[in-house]
Amino acid sequence: LKKFNANLFGFSTGTEKETAGFNRAVGEATAQNLSAQVLELVDLMKNSPDINYKEDWKLVTILIGRNDLCQYCLDRETYSVEKYVQHLQDSLDILYAELPRAFVNVVEIMELTGLRQIEREASGCVLSGASLCPCFLNPQENSPELLEMQKVNRDFQERSTTMINSGRYDQREDFAIVVQPFFQNISMPLDSDGKP
Image 1: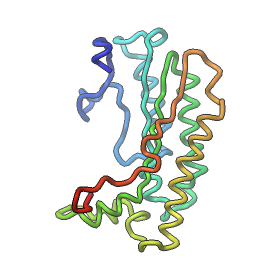
Image 2 (image 1 turned 135 degrees about the vertical axis):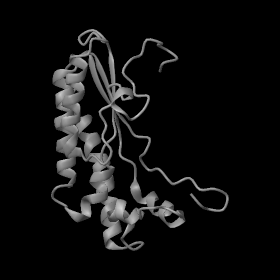
Image 3 (image 1 turned 90 degrees about the vertical axis):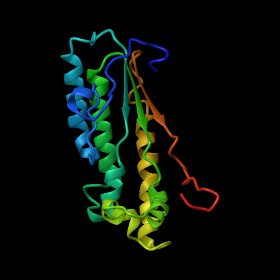
Image 4 (image 1 turned 90 degrees about the horizontal axis):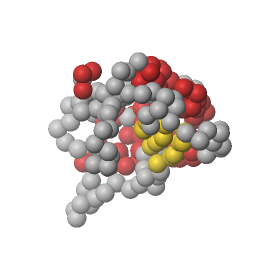
C-alpha cells in the first residue's frame, strides 16, 4: 500500500510499543478480547496528533478466532460459534459507530485441520502443538471429535460471514467491511515428498 501512497501512517514495523503503530493485536487473544483491542485502537486514533481522525481514511484488518477454535473442545460455552460471532459483531459495531472513513478487512479464520500435517512433520519444537491447539491436534484421524471440530471451524467461517454480509454495516457511505475469504477451503501446501 505504501507504494501507492507514501504518506501512509500507523502500520507496525515491529512488536514493541514504539514500533507497533496503531496495531493493537495481542498474541493468544480470543474473540472475547477483541472489543477491548478495538476500543484501544479507536482511542489511540482519536488522540493521535499525526492523523486527522475525521478526515483521513483508515484501513483496519481483523484476524481473530484461531485461539477460540483451539480451545473450543475444552470449553464449548465460552468458545461457542454464537459467542465468537457475537464478540466479532460487538467489535465491528464499535468500529461502525466510532470510526469515520474506514475500510475494515475481516480475514476469515483458516481451516485448522492442516495443522495436523505440520504437527506430524515438525521436529525439534519446544512446545508440543497438541498443547497449543489441542482441539485439532489431539483427536484421532476421522474421529467424531475431529469431525465436530471441522464442522465448528466451518461454522465460524460461515456464520461470521453471514453476519458481516447481513446489511448491518451498509448504512454509511464512508464505511465498509469486507470478508477476505482466502483461508476458506485451504489445503496445506506439500512439497514433492508430500510433506508440508
